[in-house]
Length: 224
Image (cartoon, one colour):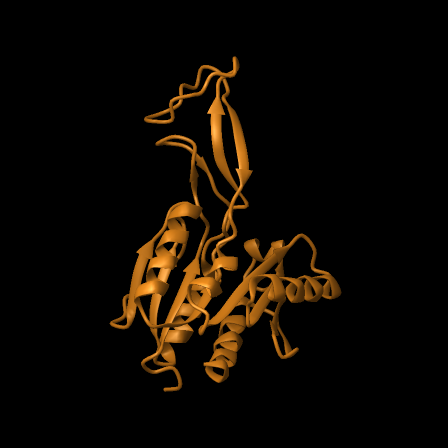
């Protein structure tokens, strides 16, 4: 098997940013394609570490599969950093939908800081202040430069020219080797266009998530 003995780290599903011990904000990512990617990697002999969000699908048990949950952006970032610094990871597939915003502070209607331990009282709506989250994917090659990095770029439109342009932009800023670009409609359907763009300029188009996962692992076989 082409990937036998090679360790691949896959992130899947969405982050959850807590407001208190009960509430938080997340996204609609279900971890479908991440699950398919794990299955394809295992079928090719890889050892897979699968970091998944709270609501994400999880692959069936396998002796070469290790599953770990994550919560928010900070938790996911720390788990990835620790794995890259301590284990021989050969490829990272960042399929997780990571929040762009994290909570900076929460105040009441009078502007007083709200205690976020326990449950925020529901008598009046709180005011949530956000700050821009740090981009995890831009740090990955700094933590470990000699791996294959795959990023996903979800956009508001299905326009092919726009998606390919954005994929190439992110390839540069992320120092990624491959970027998968798709429209936000993919959150609601198995059958949706995905464009796999490699640093060499190779572009492959797939019409559903399962075939996208298969095509991406075929590409990784050559890159690893």
